[in-house]
Length: 428
Ligand SMILES: CC(=O)SCCNC(=O)CCNC(=O)[C@H](O)C(C)(C)COP(=O)(O)OP(=O)(O)OC[C@H]1O[C@@H](n2cnc3c(N)ncnc32)[C@H](O)[C@@H]1OP(=O)(O)O
Ligand SMILES: O=C([O-])CC(=O)C(=O)O
Image (cartoon, rainbow, N blue to C red):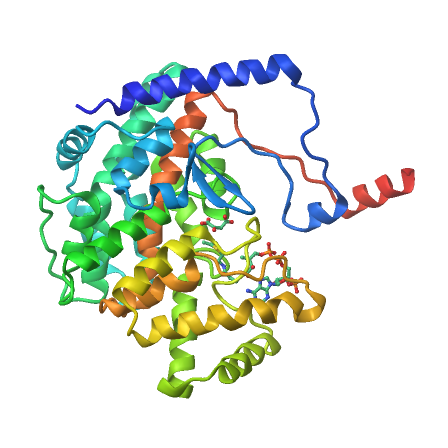
């Protein structure tokens, strides 16, 4: 057994002490005021959540514990899960013990495969991932224990059990979705000697998959793991879990949010965008042609996928980490070259577009990830968000385990009507 559970308990004790301190110092302290504009503007910029797995600084991006994206990007996803849950990296013997534990939980039930195989051929792979997880909901240990009657202080322990059961199955489930949807439907067996990312890379069964592809999948599964508490998918997952709907419901719900083009689906939209540029202009693409295409897209009312962010105000460090990988492994790939040309041109355009209304003209993680996958022959871009989802589930699990461990209540902000706001304005 790994020491994950014990270290989560230690982290929860530490976090609870901090909360006790915070409450003693100023439970009524105002952290953020909400304006009418924010109420109608997707609550952007409103500080109204506490999340202790990770933090996104507008100017330096994702931090997990005290580590920056650059610090943790060379690690394994298993270590990142430990870090998200405990705030620190595990000891060197963790990986072996954790793998042994996961290896006993890998098998995806036959009824899930049967369900996925009966779906129409044009079902989106994100629908398959979300349904696949939801179909296993009856296995929830938390639900069974809750029905028996357990203490609130135990909720997180059974949620951790659910998390491990889901995480162990993800490589097999995600690869199986790829093979059912885009391959011959035959599944490649899980290899107990490979790590989590290596198994997923291997079970996809791509002709070009080798060490470098596994390295890309490892990096991919690390960089997408979490992005603090307010992003659409993590927040959705947390809201659902806060009603004590178990982790299967909460993960499936979070994935449904990730499947939107303004969030996780932007990576597939980016690659489509790049391939259209490639189709139209080919190898001799100039900066002027890129500018023309970008303006055409904006003028037709569409967003430039992979650019902009609700929190970040600089180039996403996850984008930078992927670009470094691309420069090493994909420098000659046409999509990667177009990605670079877009990076040289788009921020300048968005900075001044419609009087500078775009708050962040810089690229986010989705602007490059697809080009790298495409370079290795993973050319079914409908599948890309599934990989994002597999990684992001680590964050959903960690956020919900910690929130339950800290006894956080059901999430239920207050809404009001236009009339209520008009009356309030008249009172001024
Ligand atoms: C992993 C992730 O989820 S990262 C985000 C992935 N999504 C994308 O890359 C899609 C493209 N980007 C966007 O749509 C946005 O930048 C978002 C959704 C990421 C952030 O949205 P917001 O916080 O509302 O951004 P912002 O405050 O800059 O929006 C202001 C205006 O600029 C527009 N804008 C923002 N980004 C872009 C863009 N890339 N291209 C064109 N217009 C943009 C918005 O649509 C909005 O226009 P509106 O006032 O006409 O509605
Ligand atoms: O933080 C956000 O809103 C979107 C994002 O980049 C992520 O969830 O990875």
